[in-house]
Amino acid sequence: MKSSRESFRNGNWNTEEIIKTRVQWEPRAGTIDRKYNNVAVPALADYTHYIKKLGKFRLNDAVRYNKEALENSFVRIPNLSPENAWPLAQDNLNRIAQKECREAVAADHFRNYSVHTGYTSPNWTQLLLPTYFTYYTDDDGSPVPIYIHGQTGKIAGPRLASQRKGWKWAGISMLIALGLFLMTLLFSAGSALLPVLSILALILGVLAFIAAIFAVIPAVYPWQWNRRQQDKIIVMISNQDQPNLDH
Image (cartoon, rainbow, N blue to C red; front, side):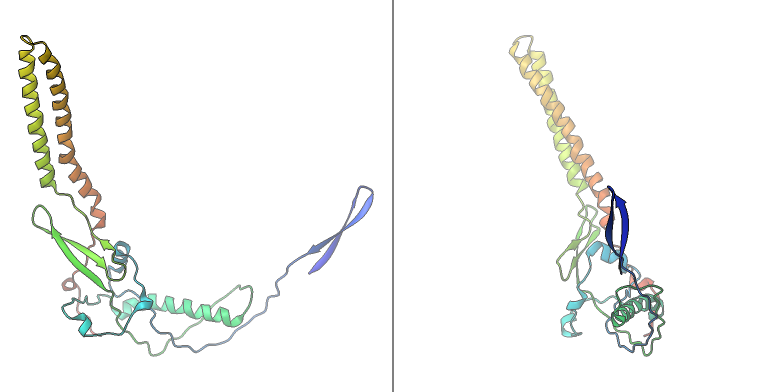
């Protein structure tokens, strides 16, 4: 809408053009009948934890089920029933339907927008996310699981340091420090006969102190490092701990 405003400045009247934008609100209503396929929802109780560690999957790259491709593979059985997963699926379907309704209205602005939905003949299928699994053993021989994203190759899991090797190198450093300290004492005792030995004793004493300080690093660092790795552990709920589901 275009209008004008008059103002008196410097002894003259001035006209200022003003353009205002107004929205003409109109009620619009209608119905749509659509079929929505492949609206994905989690089927595992620990799905969010799993995806947070490993990363999302490109669901648009999904292919049809192939029995031969799954030979020698493990498949996790869903532990969320369709009844438990339906509220999330309904929210996702509502968002898709809302988007189509807004496009059908073809308006520049919306307010008091609502959608009333009804669903008939829902059909559930399973989507398998490709993941490789391996492990390595820690100092105690316990397996540490490692997961590999089947699409991106991202590796998820803790990278533990060997506390046993840390103590080994700490022991070697302490032995070196002890040897240097004994040589320091020996050279200090001999400096009374040969003064130049006092300089060597001082150098060896400094080296012994450095070696003793260094011995603390491999003893403490693996423990601190492994504590920081705990949040990278992927805890997978065993199917054996879940109730049997009938589909």
